[in-house]
Length: 292
Ligand code: URA
Image (cartoon, rainbow, N blue to C red; front, side, top):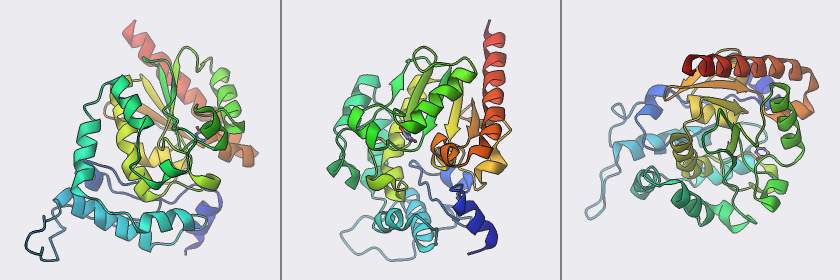
């Protein structure tokens, strides 16, 4: 592994690469935490003849499968368990259908679907799903990574130590989860021992976040940590390179920053996250001004 990769991994900041062009062509979005070389559905021929009586995988499924194979072949410290889970991941045609079904659910049906979800192995160990909380027409949607143990117990996102920091961060720019914010995670179930989300878990869970985004239509998205950022921006850049500018998810401005749990371990980066919060505040104020 390169020195740069070592440093980024030590900071828990990546690297993670998925080309926008690839993911734009996928109905479901894989979220590898490491390099997936440029691959397009068109450039991915069906290498293996399909035995009689079996369905050929769709171009989407082939591309996603290829990404998964590239991702799970690569090395990344601290993610062995997640890679092991990802290694067995396969993108079935049903997964495309499932994503399309979820993309049509209304809010209540979406909540029910999440509550009953058994799409990945995390369901067997969770105490409950963590759908997200906050207001239904939020100024800001905060997107985190996955529920921790405390969130799993309480059924609410960001209620542990990282959550307290998140609340203070929001308060510092006059935002409150009670009346302006919705908070959700990429994963709706707690990964055991707080390990990183596995590729297949993200793949199976992200249609829920995508539907939440579409229904909530927040004015601004605040993505904290590499898993949220990677899913929303489909970028191969580390958090440090993406901070400080306004990105976009389907026309909605996206501000990125470090995950509060990372900040608890890396106090010097709190000043950077303060700049990110100011950018969040200014972006929101501009939008509100334009609308008034
Ligand atoms: N970390 C997250 O990303 N989400 C939570 O809900 C709690 C901790």
